[in-house]
View (cartoon, rainbow, N blue to C red):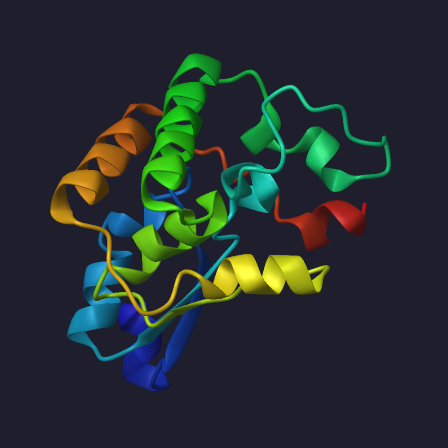
Length: 166
């Protein structure tokens, strides 16, 4: 990025970032922040796993790319289940949706400019909008971060659009 930025300014970066895909924390977010490059996080809900609507082991249709997603794989199952359980408990305690908490965790990072989300219904839009206008307290944010740290890296896998082109 540094080499490219010397030739042509990088105004924004779209990168996969969520509680299960944190690779951009290894220098990329800091570089973007220092160079005033906006970060548009995508896949904030880990293909739906961090929305509270689909559980680990959910059986997707064969033509659904999530059927081959590392997010839903058995890799790190216990660690992912601990994170999902904490999100569910926090949702019940605060009255906020699991998806809004997952998105808020991203938005609370001052190096992230925005989160790109997809929606399939008005209900999903309403749940995602619950992520606005509040912040996670430091204890809850730290707890989710620690549980996330325990999950295996590299779960992002192949982007959905790349899987469709095969």
